[in-house]
Image 1 (cartoon, one colour):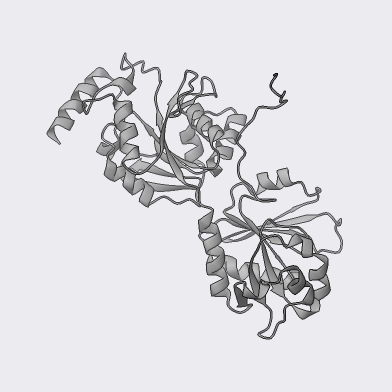
Image 2: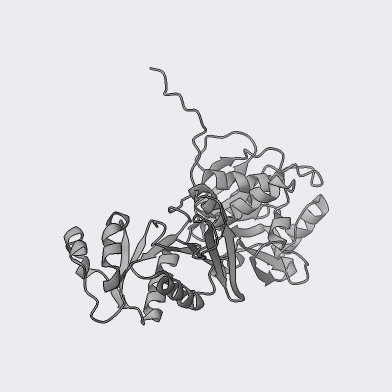
Amino acid sequence: MDKKHTKHTNLVKKYNDNFAPNEVAILGAKCGVIADLVHEVSKRLSNYNLGYFDASHAKDVEQNTLAEYTFHHEGNLQINTSSPVNKYEQRLQFYNHDFVFINGNHYQGAKQILILDDEKEASVKKRLDQLTNIQFIIKLNEDSRYFDCLLERFPNIKNSTSYTINEVDKISNHIHNLIKENIAPVKGLVLIGGKSTRMGTDKSELSYFGKPQKQHVKELLESCSLKTFYSVQDPSEKENEIHDSFLNLGPFGGICSAFQKNPNTAWLVLATDVPFVNKELIQLLLEKRNPSKVATAIKGKNKDFPEPLITIYEPKAYGKLLAYLAQGYSCPRKMLINSDVEIIEVNDSLIRNINTPEEFKEAIRCIEKL
């Protein structure tokens, strides 16, 4: 029997809610109340990249004009667009956001926070179908009531977690947990298969610790509880290998290929020509990981730039890498030094590259003394 014809390549999709990777729509109150609540919560969660998706309320603009706010410690950035709402465009605009609040009076979010305001009973009744995944309830007043339409649709709604509008710290903490629940897991990626021109032989096959270095690096990452893959140039069907499908782009292509295989994980990328990287350094990198940044990278204290091949790349880095590729750049370091990255400084000796036979012999001597 012939296989069903598929028109497009079956790619793994990046996880998204309706408009963003992680979102909640707030509805059931006046737009000003919603906006004020978002602002107060955002001040308490300023270490994250937060956004607010709303329709413009100005009277002198077209009805479909959108207002988007990014909250950060230096203030709010507002972006106005007059294009129709398109979930694919919105997902691109919110690609780097850790969490997005949506004005549920205008747009439906995949998750919802319902505010109980007696004056908005008719509005809530009209939007019952939008209440598909209520996270918690906010009471505008201590005596705010559950509407009959809510009790009929959701008989157990009174058992839902609820706060009053003034309990901003508790509301913020609940939203903080929603953000943390969405933090991507980390997997390991060992980059092998380079040309090794100066070494004259495959650097991943060199033995510093009584085994091929690629095996040592994989075991090093696995000892830190990371499911780890080899990045290889030749097509492979092995479960622990990822074929580099971005041809002739070196490590850049290997990183992008890993994200193509799984765009919903963070990748700890490690080369095979840095034999002094040890378990303690990997654990430090994982401990200091900042998933709100594009990446968390190691940098030598006396170096000017981070090491792109001793780095945790967050899922949001995939879009950044592709954007740089679209501009004609295939250097992961260029992306890192021009992006919001967490930097961890260490002694230069821990991350020195071994590229020549002479350096290899010297490295062996140093390792034997450890």
